Structures are given as structure tokens and as C-alpha cells.
Image (cartoon, rainbow, N blue to C red; front, side, top):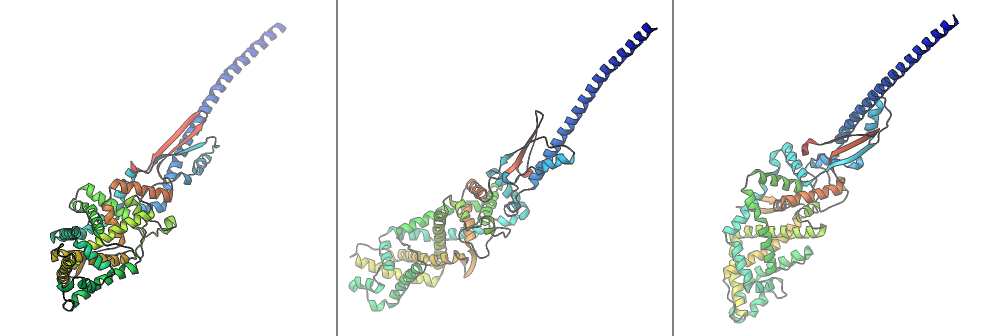
Length: 453
């Protein structure tokens, strides 16, 4: 009996050991399966957390940047990882992964071009139409048709330009110039003409003294004037072009001229949506002038100031020449000055009085333009094109900037605008890339705004 019992005990022990081995294998498989499922669940939760974090980052774009400029973008300084870890905690998971954040793509000039197109699509197609340059174009065409540029150019190239300049700017009065002519002219018969010339002299002195400007009216001024007008003649071709590229250029020019700070702000000036520029960068900047010229604050303001003055000269020449009384007065003065020059030069310089009349028209327009420029930089409007006494087109300083933007290459406008935006808002990103690691595996997700895709 004892032997049998021993055998029974051995068989029961073997069964227990067998069952233990089976159960150990089963437990191992089950644990492995549970671990796999747990890891898979964690991985899914990480991916969900990454996508939630990306959605949060993209939704947290700079509101002012969008409201003023229509740009969806963010800076990495504004990005945090709170949403990612909160999403893991909600699923009952410990934050065992470290989140890596990287900007996927910076805002580029091409992106800005897409922004501008979208910006004007929902703000109305009429906002950037080409009506502004219609009056300017008509003014240039009329000046050419009347031969004003040609005749003033002939005057400037003649010796008469130097004589007339000295009469206007010099210390000698018109009466003293008549006396220099000797017996050729009778002072008593030229009282009215002498008064007219002295009036021009006084206007010149008053304009330069009151505005504290040191402006020299000479042949060099005429050359600079022609260069300014020539640089703006490209607007004539743009005006006649209705292709999509041309219309996009109008939109880009309008966006840059009216949506960035400028040095001479008209009254109540702000961005297109009315935002005060001081709330954007806290100081007065010549941003629009820089966008047009690529020069720093003072250089850009001075350069554009001279071009504004040249446009005002052209406008005043046309207005004055259209005034019959003014034109007749200039022709009479031209005859008188021609006689003075002939006498003073001892017969060596003989100039057609009509040519001198055109020169005088130019000098008078210069004086008037100085006054008009003063008004423009203080928020008033200047008359650019006038017909039959009716002011057809007037420009504010912003509208001058718009005209200059139209004559600036579009890529330059976009690149410089992006520089200003980066200065005010930091490096801007349109997409984001996130990574998280867990037990040797890396999980990633990336996304950008659909506007730029």
C-alpha cells in the first residue's frame, strides 16, 4: 500500500508541474498581448494628442495679423504643449512622451501673394481698381499733347534758363534788370510786367522761407523732374492692361500703400480695417516708403518727397497753361525777358519769347508745388487733374504712395512687406510639425493652413 501511495503522489505532482508550465506560458502570452494592446492604445492616444495639439496651434493664429493683413500665421514663441499632455491625461495615461515642436514652413513672398488675393476677394473687388491712375495718366497725355514738356525742355537747354533763374532767385529786382538793358527798354512802359516778375520772385522767396526749404530752381531740377515723370510712365501701360497679372499688381500695390504705416499720415489714418498703426508697432515708422524704395526711413521719405513734388509741378503746369489769362501774362513776360536777355548779352543770345513763357510756367509751377507739397504732408489733398475749373482728380499722400507702389516691381513689394511683418510680429510660420517618442518609437504629425497649399 505504501508503494502505491507514492506512485499516486508522483503522478499528482507531475500534473501540477505540467499545469504550472502551461499556465506560465499562457500568462506570458496574455501579458504580452495585454502589453501590446496597452502600447497600441498609448500610441493611438499619442497620435490623437498630436493631432489635437496641431489643431490647437493652428487655431491660435495671431488675431491682429489676420484682422489687419489677412494672414493666417503664428510664431513658435506662442506655441505651448499643454493641450498634448492634457489629451493624454484625459485618456488616463501618464505623460511618458516628450513633445518636439518645429515650424514646418515660414511665411514667404509667394504665400503673401496668395494672402493678398484672398484678402481682396472677400473685401470687395472694387477696393483696388485702377481708377486712381486715370487722372494721372490723363495729365501726362495732356502735357505731351500740348507740347509743354518739349517746350520747357528747349527753354532749359537754352542760355535763357540761366538768365531767368537769376532774375527769380537773384538780388536784383526786375526793374534793375530792365535798367541793365539800357535804352532798349522803357521802364515806364513796363510797370505792369516788372510787377509781375517781382511777384514771381516774392512767391519763390515766401515759399522757400516759410517751408524752410533750400530748393534751387535750375536745369538740374528739370532733369530730375523728367526722371521722376519717366519712372512713373509705366502706369500708362498698366492702366491699359486688364490681364489677371495686371489686376493682381493693382491689388498688391493697394495692399502695400494702405495697409502699412507711412511717415506723413493723413488725418484719421490707419490700416484698411481702421487699426491704428501705433497699436501694431508702438512708434511712427516710414514702412510704406521703405517698401517702395528699399531705403531707410529718412532716405526713402526724401526720395519720395521729391517725386511727389515733381508730380505736383506737372499738375500745376497743366493747370496754369490751361488758364488763358495766365498764359497771356507769361507770353508778355516772355517778350520782355527775351528783350532783356538780348540787350544784356549784347545781341549774342536771342530766344523765342514763347519758349521763355513755357520756362516761366515751369518756375511758377515749382513755387506752387512747394506750397501744395506742404499741404499734402499735413493731410490735405492736392489737385492733380482739373478741367474747366472742376477738380477731376485729387491725391492725398496715401494715394501718391499707391501710385508709386504701382511703379515698383511686385516681388520687391512682397519681399519688403514681409520684412516689415517679421519685424512687427516675429518669424511667422504657416505650418507646424510635432514629434513624440515612446519606447523607441517616434510618432509625428504635421499640418499647415489650407490657404497656402
